[in-house]
Image (cartoon, rainbow, N blue to C red):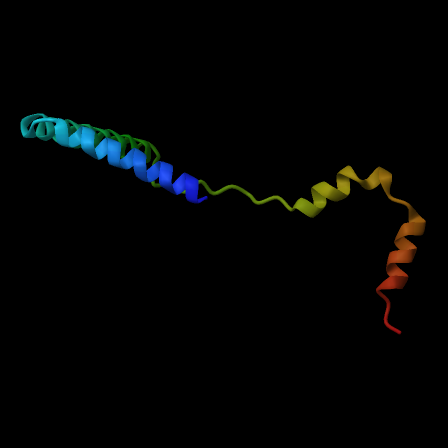
Length: 95
């Protein structure tokens, strides 16, 4: 772990030394290009979200909610065993 930390620290020192070699005007241009790229990306994502949310109407679709138990009972009706039902009923009876 210490070796990894040392390697990252040395790598950051090299990058910082390389950045300081550039003239100030070139550093300013790189920072300006990064900011403009970030600004364009932010505008594109914001517009994309705005258009996507604007497409849908604000009217709610009211649909009938179907009971999942009825669907389940219909699909498993052929698999039921009467003995299993008797055991379940005895299990939940009062004593």
